[in-house]
Structure formats: C-alpha cells, structure tokens
Length: 310
Ligand code: BDR
Ligand code: CA
Image (cartoon, rainbow, N blue to C red; front, side, top):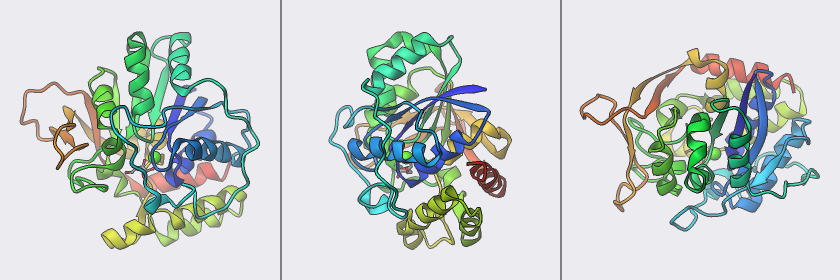
C-alpha cells in the first residue's frame, strides 16, 4: 500500500476524491489536512470530517491548517460550491473530532517519522499548507515521496481568471514554492479535468449504486459547477480532484509530459498562471509531469466501482 496525506478544501469534488481514496485498499490515508480555499477553513475542516463519517471512517485523523494564503487575502468560490462548500446533499454535522495539532505540524512530523520517500502528498486545494511546511522545515522536502496535485492549466488556460486555475490563483506564492522545491511532482491541470465530465449517464450510475455514498455523490456532482455548465456549454461538469487519486490507482488512464512549469506571481493580469513549457521551447529544466489527457470512461468506471465498496 501507498501512504498518502490528502491536503484539501472540500468542495464537492474534493469530497469525491476523499471517498475514492478511502474506498481503495491500495492506499493508506495517514491523515487529511484541511486548507482554506473553496470555502473558509472552518468549513473545509468540517466538510472533511463529514466525508470521513459518510465513508464509515471516523477514525481518520483530520487536521485544520492555514486559514489564508501566504501573502494574499483569501478568495473563495461559493458561486461554484454553495455556501457550505458541500451544497447539493445535506449531511449531519460531524461528530468525530478535529485533531488539535495544526495541519502543517502534522505534515512535518509525519514526513520526519515515516521512512524517506514513502509518503505521497495529494494536494486538492491551494498549496498553502504544503508550502508552509516546506518553508518551515526544509529538511522534509527530500523526504517527500512525491506530490500529486490538482491545479493549473495550459491549453485550457483558466477558470477563475482568463489566465489562471483556482487552486494556483488563490495562493500563487505557495504554488511557486511547491513547483520550485525539487520534489517529484505530478500535476492534474484543467487540460485533464475538463475532459472528466459528469454527464447525465455518469451521474445516474452514481445514484444507481443505491447507497448513501452513491446518493451523496450524485447530489453533490449534480449541484457542483452547474455554474460551469452554463459557462462552457458542455454536456457535463468537470470532476477535478478525484483525478489525483485515480492517478495513484491507475496511472495508465493518464498521459502527459515531463516539462518545466513556472508560476506567475507578479502580473495582475496573469497571476497564478502555470506557464508550462509543453513544446520544449526553453532550456529551463523540467520540474513536473504535466498531464494532458485522460481516459474518461476508464476514470468514471474506476470511480463508480470503488464508490460501490463504501
Ligand atoms: C479546483 O478548484 C476547486 O474549485 C475544486 O475543488 C478544484 O480543486 C478546480 O479549479
Ligand atoms: Ca479542491
């Protein structure tokens, strides 16, 4: 099994990613660290616990992390996710406790404790917690097995501004630290997730599971990014964050390139842009495997089969 920490800002698609991880015996979830993003920290820390309880896993350790980006004020996305961040399927308030330790301390302690190279960091929101941990404890960077994150875009450019994807836009300084850290890095940008669309048929397959989890996922994905449907005019809304977990389980569903990716932090116009050297037109050293394509049917087949186990 592979040991992972899920750093997340749930978010309906984050919630589905957490469920996919908890349903997969190949993965051992060492802990879930919440970060401010789609909604404020108090709600993302609450939502992470709601999802663990839905999965029947109140034993999972959930930690609250940074409540705002490293150098900027927080930008949230209630217009996408609703006021709670998990609109679309109401669930009871969590009973499991939030752990007392700060998420950044949990990340640092875990990387120092576990054998070097054995812990994968899965980042599904702004990169504030990861970058803060790397800055505070530079010794952990070389102990990271790899970072797999949802964020950025190249051909699909942006969703929150014409140039930037939400997770990178919210904390570009943090993204710059993570992309520059020298860790093994795999990126699921909008180029991938805009091909992972929840069509009517895929949504019906969630509901047809006939379980509490199936109902919740159908309700969430039905609500989630209705906004995007009208924005893009597609036949389904993108399901971003579960692609990170799916890659750990079935990497053959994805293809991409190992290229140089730099983060724009200065320009007002393009702040948070992931400048990916897809065509190799610079001599800047590659630092990330930037995914470009996904087998969407394979992905949704895997997801539905795993959710059925919960
Ligand atoms: C990303 O932003 C959030 O709204 C989603 O949860 C996802 O992580 C997509 O741009
Ligand atoms: Ca997210």
